[in-house]
Image 1 (cartoon, rainbow, N blue to C red):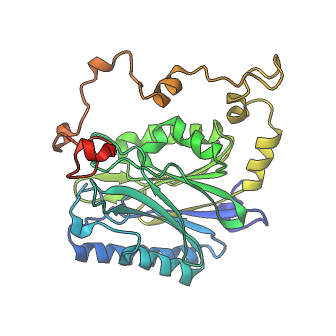
Image 2 (cartoon, rainbow, N blue to C red):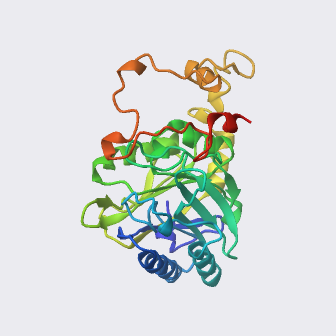
Image 3 (tube, one colour):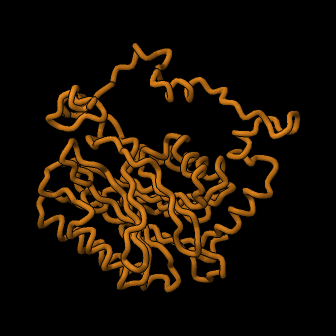
Length: 342
């Protein structure tokens, strides 16, 4: 059930609009300003499209395109004109919005960041991509965790970006922190289509969580993004899917956070996120609450290492034209190892 894309909105429904935005080419500050204007116009289109829409969601790279250009002249900041324009658009159209920016970072490479702004124009969520799509992307690894906020109708909402969604731990963390709706914005191109679909469904089903997922669409003359706006219900059922890949189409669906809460409270079979921490509760009271997973123990201890670690060939971005990094995680540009340790 999706209320005919939100046309028939229920009292407990949250209507989402996923914008399969035309993939832009952004090289100069003037290009950046023009693309900001395009996104602002699309916020207005979303409001006119479905009167009851609660949130409009733009893909990763909606503002900057897929060039991977780290030119400081076209990087953004939270207090910059681009975010101010998005804030004004949400306030003027009385709608929540999810946006993508490449964020300037004086201490290293730019961050690939996502923000959610409410219908009053206030910044409510700020996230930096934890898993840039290596070796292709040059972005700094995120350092803000996975924030979860209270959104429209009291729905608990989390945001991850593109490649993040290929790690089951990301969706699990969002759900563990209470997310009932997880947004996944992306710039993926056609070779990832099938993986995109089944990971979106898995992220939903394994966590009893709605996922709202959208890519850029169309061609920039080099890359072809696939659109694939996709809303998946908490049982893994696809309830809306933009299969045409038509640029600037808005895929809409009504989702029901109240039914997510009901399933999480009442499901016995396949209530997987609960059962992860309460193994075999039929046999032992409360279930086993240990951590039998070696990879988790090793990661916490800082000794994560694969049995085939020595055979891995691609361990930096040189295959995609980036210089091999010399700075360790946590060090800032121009900072010595000793300074970073202080």
